[in-house]
Length: 339
Ligand code: 5GP
Ligand code: MN
Image 1: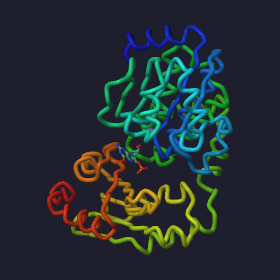
Image 2 (image 1 turned 135 degrees about the horizontal axis):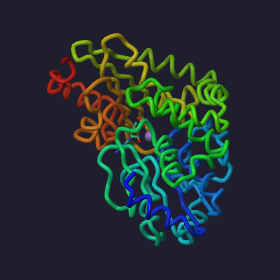
Image 3 (image 1 turned 30 degrees about the horizontal axis):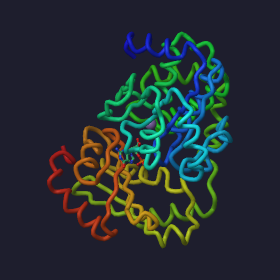
């Protein structure tokens, strides 16, 4: 973080404030962990902190300390709007542009009159905040929140609640400390969070061993639908809305499915296409190993973005047409995928 930005942040936080903290739409472990971890820290400093999520998040995160205070904009528009109007500082965590928070974006633009601080590790951050702490080399926004608190001189004030929240997001965004974004510093941060009370083994159990039988059977369906295109080192999975309904799909059930494509020997590019009948779109998750940028691919062809090795996007065509478009794109990437 730049020294100048640290000074500005210290000044902003030197008197009690009403602070909003916002994660991206469809919040994941890093988004909710960073928001709630930061909220506990800010509360300990005498501020009022409120997390407003654009929409709901998976049950396997609903044990995070502070989860009961979170407002869901989609379901609580009136109360959220009132809180947005009353706030004087807003943190954007784990997203890089206002269009990543759905209908909450226009609401903030209309009703919020204070300063913005962005803390994020996605590519190509938009330039709207007073402080933009962006670092695309970071494992997770949770790791960045740790560095942010440290830069304010308060590393020793990190509580057990903050430690549990930040550990969760680092763990989920690094695929349990295995992705290349995991550095020795990440491990030092994690060690420090454990010293402060992060219950590492419990967190793994709560996040990864919270399956329902329906979810495991949905995974079985997804794996049966997997197609490997060895010539392109690519694998993709499809799930239609009928298949999701049949297995009583709940938010978060498909989290992590895309990674099974990458577990195939020789596969470097894995994609899952999930039909969302309600929104009339196909939601796409893309993952890669090595230099192949799924951020560029998702931005160029599927109205999305993210990181080099993990990105998301969408298609407004039906499943069959979307798959056709995807498969037809592969030849132009053959060199990148096979080198
Ligand atoms: P996931 O595939 O798990 O939904 O998302 C992977 C990564 O890409 C996450 O960091 C997420 O924030 C980002 N991402 C997901 N969907 C979109 C999208 O539609 N647009 C952009 N810009 N980023 C996305
Ligand atoms: Mn993240």
